[in-house]
Length: 315
Image (cartoon, rainbow, N blue to C red):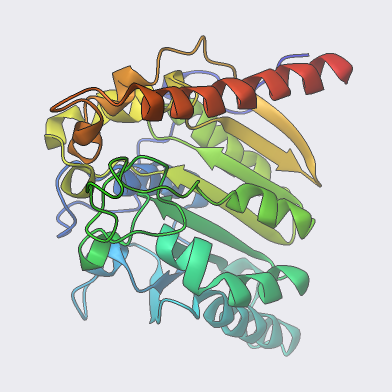
């Protein structure tokens, strides 16, 4: 049976009220900010954001932030530990009657892929194992974006970063495969995990609404198209972000108590349509086309979706 949205079925159902206000110093065309803005429409104002050092650090210029909710800044590796402290403090205040349940706050970690896939993984694993009741929002732009687009565990095969340049020794650029953080989280058995993309707003809103029904750790991996690091015109963010999903490179899915469901099945355009729009993959097409590298990327996508089809047919 196809996945069905229960709360958000039409664009007009997305709340019009903004909870992340304009005027930030993030880069024009930031896909991560677009995803967060949509997520906040479901999360509302009663939120305390715990921000790991990264691109989203630029959201705040002390003492101002664009959030109607509260804000706590931490090091790159300690945001989940900070969330633990906040959640515990809120629970203690409620238990002592010093804070009413109506004044309780949602605790939301904001982390980039460098923090999520790498530096804060130990802290995150501990928080999930302790069944901490929090949201983890990862804006994934597939590199250490705030410090110059260095290679991260989320950098895909074939991408060029400042620390995985295209060279005679490594003509493909990055030769690693992207770490599957979705499955690493799923192994911890949290109640809810999902991937989202801002070009599919109803899918994104629905997932945040569904996650609100669960107590415990909740992960959202948000595709964050990055014109500064991926090297394309900011006006092309919608097209780049949509093609990531339509080529099958960014699957939209959720896992409820470990059971995975794909929430959108694309017809799958060739991966070249996505790759050729970005300067970080330009070396795959100029001065000569690296057909073996492109074929490798396409093969992994095809294999992934064939496995999905087999799993669903066997279910």
